[in-house]
Image 1 (spheres, one colour):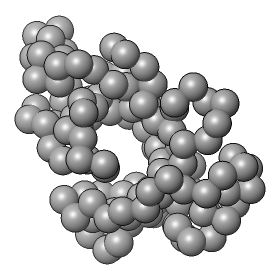
Image 2 (spheres, one colour; image 1 turned 180 degrees about the vertical axis):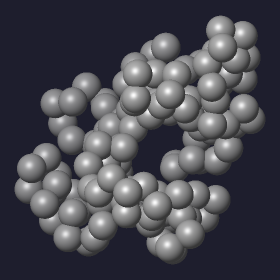
Image 3 (cartoon, helix red, strand yellow; image 1 turned 45 degrees about the horizontal axis):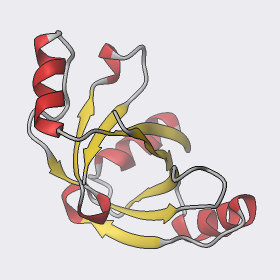
Length: 134
């Protein structure tokens, strides 16, 4: 692994949360985009002082979004930690060989054009882990 890419936080109101996190992090979002495949809109902050680690606010754009279901069940807060890897296919294969339960066995599109895959939290002590590759 190269580094922690970002920390994902689920929010109900993206515009209001952008105001809050802009103040907390001392910067505005570097990017705001919709990810149709996941039915979410994200705001990505890259504040100075976090050594390149981003904070990603995630808000559902429809009631049938997995993030919408997550929000209704668990409320706002920490959603996932994303780790950068040089070979996503290789990482998925390695995890599967070691009996990790994968949400994504095939990489899918993520924010900023990156490929992503999630490991099911049942395999990671309750934490949703995302791996990404540029």
